[in-house]
Image (tube, rainbow, N blue to C red; front, side, top):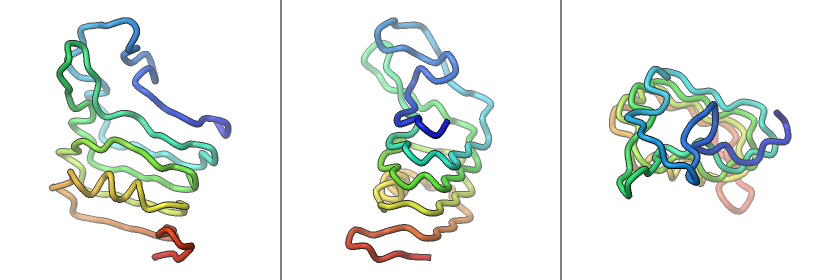
Length: 125
């Protein structure tokens, strides 16, 4: 999957914006999500979808998320991760992903950051 640039709501038969469907929760059983070795990925899975103008969280049970070796990733769900306890982020060219996630994570118990570029080429570990 080295050429994937965007992972949207249509992933794995999810909601296609052009064809509204009634869906109560997408990915209701996901407890772990790993985005690894996707060198061209720029946008991750959207956390919200709209069927009637309202937004709903889709990763309600997600407890662990790994983002590793996705250097171009700039955007992931900027909504909520109500159950997220562990977040590992490694080898990104931008800190935008961290900014998106940090706004809505309230249950985090473990955070590991390695080799993330913060604008001017500096990195953090």
